Image (tube, rainbow, N blue to C red; front, top):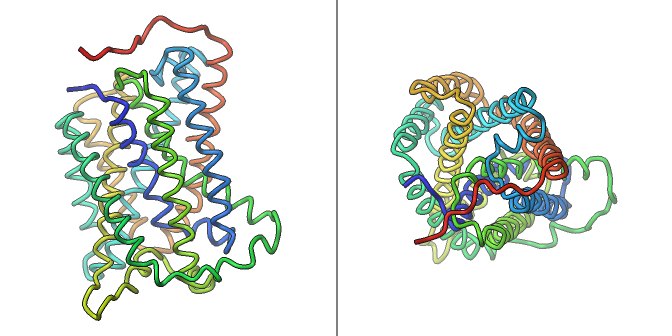
Length: 365
């Protein structure tokens, strides 16, 4: 089973785009302040138009292979260069996923356990699942995203009484300032990982409902991120929030009902651990898809990539200050490599080619 359907693609979109903004919202809140939820709304609209535009181009030209699109738009040599740049960005995204998860677990759960120990429990299982093929990947992603969404609904209900909407006021007191624009760009950087889903488009069959399912998936992502941002902003004052490394974890520690029901950290840790692991394995599989298309793949490449990611993540995840410096740079790089460049290349492809008869969708039997 090496094919996916459009419903699987919905889970891939959720797995690549949800977790970043929920885990480290301070990256953009430090610029947007109490108006960050507005910057999330604006960035969400841009992200929605970006991804639907890519799907529109693929559908209009009946071509869903990323390498073919890059080659037809730029030529084989330049196309390969930009594909390699995209792969490099994917590898950096692997470093982001493993480093954030290891650091969060170290700071909030087991402080005596070094981050590198957590890295082993992320990278090694990811190799195992990846080598089992598309079916194993699909099962893990679908089950994991389902549990994450259920825990998110539970947390929304449990934390409702601790939120004060007065913390959001005054709205846009400083107008559209430079920090506010930077906040929008950083939110787009957090959203940029949705481009990890692009290489999976070539594996999707029966694409007749691809636009509809992508729209549904994106709308669910958008509402989750907007409400999550409003949630943390309305739970803490801005000064307090900016001093928290992982505010979602602290938010859930407030939960207490009847002096008995506690342990909200369990749900957010499920979201964080499961979310980052799913994003990691999806990113790793996206890299392998592109490397196979470029004929750079061999049986050792997954181990080489994993070793490289482990070495870099070992240093980045050790100190939260270094990690946040990395994240503040990564979000800008993500905007450029995951969103701006693909948009330009897909546009060139759209305006310089005609509809192809290749890649005809596979019909269900």
